[in-house]
Image (cartoon, rainbow, N blue to C red):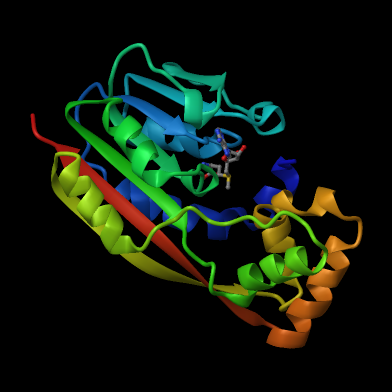
Length: 242
Ligand SMILES: C[S@@+](CC[C@H](N)C(=O)[O-])C[C@H]1O[C@@H](n2cnc3c(N)ncnc32)[C@H](O)[C@@H]1O
């Protein structure tokens, strides 16, 4: 259901939180990195190059996204689901930008991620937390109206991740909720934005989903040109003891 073309329509806006996440990582020599839910791999390559990593593995379960994956020395990609991915040895950095909100049960997930990290290694995760915005709430409302299965975000409140990182043995941590303001050409562009991500859960389930979603969304947020779209995101970073 993932379309690289649709997702990349807002490439510049979507790369901002990626760079904020990269800025949290402490660069070490000869790092081995995994990027979970790497998408087209373009940002995986940027991460690999920025940190001068010796080895970076990008994993994703969408063949259409991985079809775009770039090549570079030490960079490789694998088709795999985050839920069942089993590395053969630990990484110095487990990284994930805008993907873990697609994986259920974050208590279990973060326990698994911690076990993929070598001593002294780091975890860096960015996830959308925008469920209260009309862009997300209305998608759930339309799904309910049409009798479709509703997507429930597994993302927890920020403080739960702080507690979780502490419990899992991260001796240093940084957890923050950041609000990104995106100035879109018009409020209709919100539909284009979520078509590249959230609506991938719904649009195939009903032929009129997008039309109904657009109608309800514009009735609530109005037809504005430009439109200031606020998007909450959680940024998490932790480091294990050496
Ligand atoms: C919003 S895109 C982010 C891509 C990339 N990390 C970036 O920042 O541009 C989310 C990606 O997560 C992948 N994904 C979603 N659920 C997944 C899962 N359970 N296992 C592996 N990949 C998954 C999707 O295929 C998609 O490429």
